[in-house]
Structures are given as structure tokens and as C-alpha cells.
Amino acid sequence: MKSGYVYILTNRPMGVLYIGVTSDLAARMEQHKSAAVSSFTKRYNCHRLVWFAQFENIHDARAFEHRMKKWNRA
Image (tube, rainbow, N blue to C red; front, top):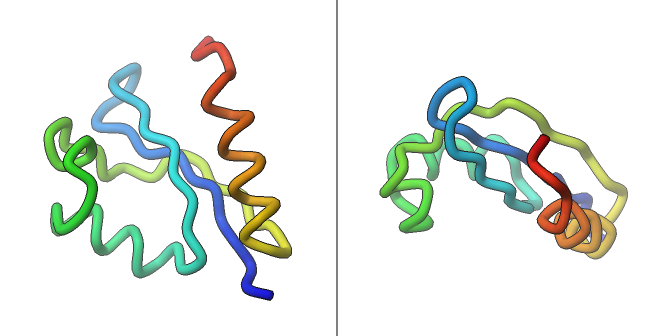
């Protein structure tokens, strides 16, 4: 099974946050920086990686992403 990553992007300090999941973090960051994916990150210019975590499989990463999206921003 593929490993997975959960990551957080922002557009500036104390700005908009975007939480995502991927199996190839380097390729996904290139997609975000070139504005080739996700209308949210393209609209808000979110391309600064501020945090990521690696998981043994993509299913665990997706479950963690789902929990993170329910967290309080503070």
C-alpha cells in the first residue's frame, strides 16, 4: 500500500489555511505552485507549505485529514 501525506498550506502568516492529502508530496506542491489544481488554492494563492506528516498508508492519512478539518484553527 502507498504511503500518504497530510499537509497544510497558507498564503501568508495568519492567512488562509488549506489542508490536503496526497501520496506524492513533492509533485503535489508543484501542482499547487503552478496553480494547476484545486480552485481554492488557486483563488487564495495558497502555496506555502507550513506543515506535513507522513503516514504508512494513504487511508490513515485521509482519516487524519478528516479529523484535522474538524479542529479549531487556534
